[in-house]
Image: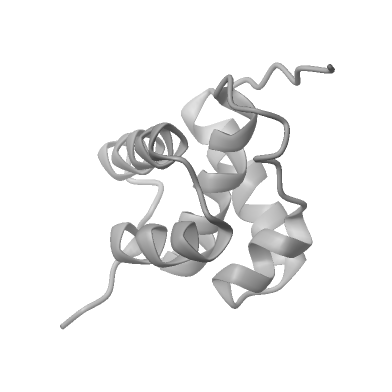
Length: 103
């Protein structure tokens, strides 16, 4: 079985105890990335981790559901710079913006 970024999204999400709405939004991010051909040749663990990292800021979830790049990278089994690079790549190529809520 070939494990793709959608499979890793579930695995990483489980490790981070992600809410279903954040997981659903991360899935939408990856679907858009696939449609725009941003995923080609990219590490699926990095893509899944970066999508979750973006989704956490885009949902109106409790602030308890916030992870550092280090925590996401550890859960994904990749480096922090890999998450950071992929996060910036997805934000740029998909035209996403994130409004950070401060409570």
